[in-house]
Length: 281
Ligand SMILES: [Zn+2]
Image (cartoon, rainbow, N blue to C red; front, side, top):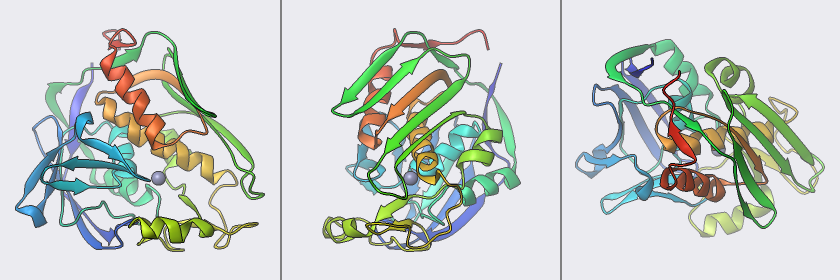
């Protein structure tokens, strides 16, 4: 039987939004509410509930309501899900979670240092009960039952520094720390003008992105030789966290992205014959 968890104490971060480029103070505040709630202190403490109908994607995963938006949730959400934190107030004074170094490393280490506190309320564990596949042109995500939460990701780019990368991991705190949490986002120099015209990547820099030109990595060295597929797994974990409760199953993603990740989450939440309570754990 697993119980809901919050942090043992407050955590504070300061950084810049990778898309907005704006400075932001972020505070993670322990709560007993049993849910994750975002609060924008710059918008009269408006609260944003983390629910799928408020989730949109635009080169990141974001919460959007009538009151405003909070973008680039995925790295922080991945950390909270992996460490089983499901009761927390996340307060920020801007529209974006700070990018820190572009990975989940700062959030993950701080959460480990702060420690966790169990709440009386039980978690509802879930399991994938039958296989499915969702495809969009060359991209796909298939899901199969499994005794653990396992992610296999494949990417393929013509670029000589990327080519084909594939990695499979069982998602738990130990493997997340060893294989995933420090992996950095990649960005192509040639995409920057188009992104910036859309108001994206305004805070992107050599300090939070592995930047590639046409032939090479501009600001190496990489943290892992297959860094990019690791970061895709990080992003997928963050998006799968929108399933809410812990889940077991094998998610196999090929050339996917936030849109497809969220299509799978939506499908599973709307079709309970594929995702059912797991009373045996
Ligand atoms: Zn990412």
